[in-house]
Image 1 (cartoon, rainbow, N blue to C red):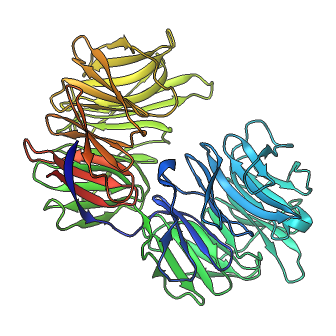
Image 2 (cartoon, rainbow, N blue to C red; image 1 turned 120 degrees about the vertical axis):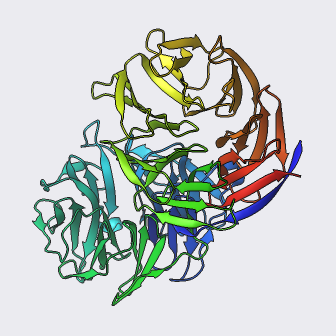
Length: 601
């Protein structure tokens, strides 16, 4: 064991607020960094205390507050229930939930989710047991939103918005029926009620907002003060007041017929919550929550103790600068090793961030690779149609060699690996395609850009292998992995600074590959107590390994030491060594967005 001291450098508030929910009193915010609760507009946010041994609560989207008081939070790792008594329940394992709704139906506490893979799932007992409710839907349907009528206990009306159109359920037996066609690509749906209790359907997309007063049998376009692609709809709990968002534009109506434009937002809207006729809350990409009070003339930031800056990486530059970027597209640069900071907001969501000690820095957005020479000014250098879920952005230490590796499945269901490469610092790019791999689990680039390493499952024999290619034009060499690794999840890989070893971590299994450019020697090191959450180089001597709040030091020889004490707060999601030669020190970023310095005592 080695003792280290921790120093907090910066923790910005705000960031990406992915989802909002309200029961008219309490507000629940799901951010890139967790879930937060407030009981009055403008008061300090309080984080939901997620059990430490359950992993992380980041990328909380969607969220819901049930009529019986429980809070529900969906994340990529599962659906969780925070009960009124303070206990937690894991309702579903790893999910791709896009909509989450709750309602009472007699004695039943109904939870309804729309999942991209499993379709509609229903729990009649608050999330304990589940059954599918996909009757009437095609086997492969891409769901984008789901809504329940404010009078669901009486009318059983549910609205399902998909890439193929709108479906309506009108009975307790849950059978979906296709509604009349709606123009354009749809993104959201909601229900409205008038003073007499009559229910109307609303859907929004790239052709505008549409309304149906006959349960989806016919639609009419809504005349709005703004034109745009409407991606978010929200109503108050009674379904009387409605708001809609299109990028930075917002419209609001108290009857669904007469709409008013609200002031433009400083950042694109990701989520909305209508508390009542007076208060509207907007969750944005980079500015956290904004609060509006009718008549809205200006937006007020509401970010006290609200954190949504999920870090993507930390780069230590040769001149002593620190640069970090996060999910919300916020870049922080410190010219003096963390004493002062400059901030740049790109106003586009980011997926990955990478760079070396010198040369340009790179960030991966959803539709492009971005480049910067100073971390303050960014330009788009390589456009992408889309990125797959399994994608790696790799950059050499001098910033000249850049790889973007994508593993995807073609429409024919055949796996394909795309290698987008630049050898001139991102100025020009070449793309090559390989069908030799059934699966790519991990990727790493040698620090000097001389070789690329992948952990693959080869089509030829469906066995896991270490696949290495010398650059720029070498052939692939494949070395069978000595023992099977889990084929679910991403494998983390990182070359040592001297290029003589590769650290490979699959969940909590630590391996080292010696002599990767000669005859690789694959050696198992140790099984850690918890899954690894981040890797970073520790100078020339080895690597840092983060497992939740714990930090380990692994020498290139395979010796593993735990650094004590653990990080004071949240899970570490990025780590890197510092510039000092011979000293065990570096920088870490946690899921809450805090940047830390640590050093051996």
